[in-house]
Length: 125
Image (cartoon, rainbow, N blue to C red):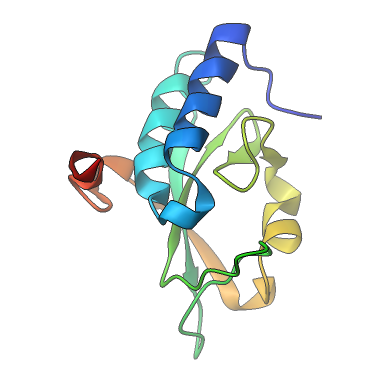
């Protein structure tokens, strides 16, 4: 089951994904777009960040380009995780880490204010 976006909301999220794809490393910039759209109908929508736990140093997504990041920012809305890997459809929150991340048992998810993560990243465009 995918996120119940309106046609306009889906278009806005998809445009954000095209502007900030996985390879760009601009997950926080995309999260700001998605959170703005998500909060229109889901007041509980929030920013999340995945970080390594314990001795782990990086987070590595299950993605063909295999980027290695110190952390990853995404949005949770309508009980789905939404980022460039999931696209506008999102992934049910309960399955997101296991489906989209390597070594998910070494990851932790925290709440974040997406406006404070990588401030000014959109200005680079």
